[in-house]
Amino acid sequence: MATQGELRDRISNCFSEIMLNEGPMEVAMKHCFTGYILSFNIRGILAHYQELGGEDWLRAAKDWADWSVRMQGSYGDPAAYNMGYRFATKNGVPADWFVADTVDQATALLNVAWVLEPDDPLYLRIIESALAYDRYIQHWNLGENGFALGYIDGAIADQESYHCAVARCVTY
Image 1 (cartoon, helix red, strand yellow):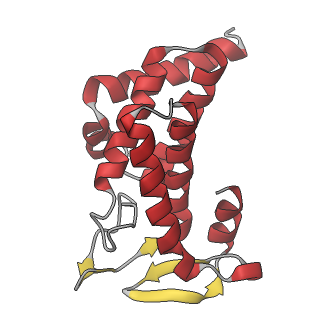
Image 2: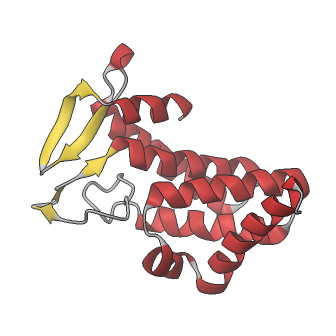
């Protein structure tokens, strides 16, 4: 029976090998384009990297971060992260775009920045990206009531708190 450490190695290696061998765009297109799910994987391999080292895990996380920052603004507002699903827009307004899902991406990007040296060019790109995103999502910030949904069915949903956005934004 595999130990907990061996299982963590297998999972981290599996994801990082796919990311390094195929690249972030191919991973997104072939396996899972959903940004928030990819962000969970990135946070997992970063935790593994911080515990054990392993340049492949860091390289995979950096590749994903670089790609995510480049994809920012490709769906609606220039500061919005691309969720990786529900791509319909009308006059530049997304049919659906969710604060909760994209804040997971922002959190993972900041986790990548945390392990980088400040003189790494990607570090500054991530920080600038996250700051732009943070300014953008303030529209949905309801103060003590948390955060609203985002866009749904082409309409802005910014009046009522949304449980997923509230819970996920707490960690952000």
